[in-house]
Amino acid sequence: MANIKKIGVLRTACFMGLYGVFIGIIFDIVFFVLSLLFVTALSALSLSSMTGLVFGALGFLIYPLASGVISFISALIFIPLVNLVLKITGGVGLKIQLGDQVY
Figure 1: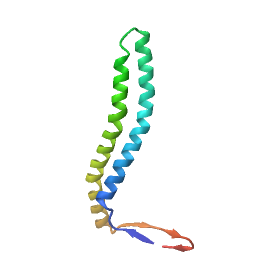
Figure 2: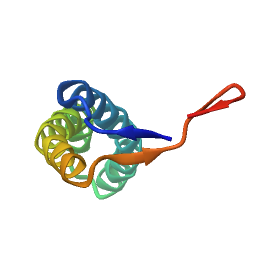
Figure 3: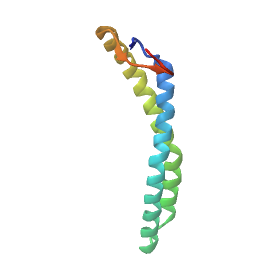
Figure 4: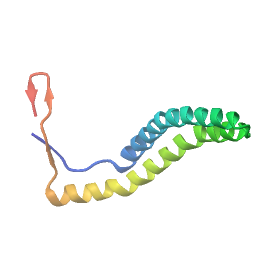
């Protein structure tokens, strides 16, 4: 059995930042569809439909980036705490199998 004693802070933060961007894109697609419905409702009410398009386009760019930055910063804060807990508890047991060998 192998033990995880420490997690690399910067690499994990970069991973979490990229993960946040991908999650942001997925949520962005949902919000874009809702924005299109909002634009359709506004045009049916004879209100400015450009407002919904502008907010939809800005959100499509800003939300994934903001999600990535927030994920990166939260990982920078969280991972040192995880490392502290791993140090106190002696690590986390991890069973790894490579081919026929189990570690």
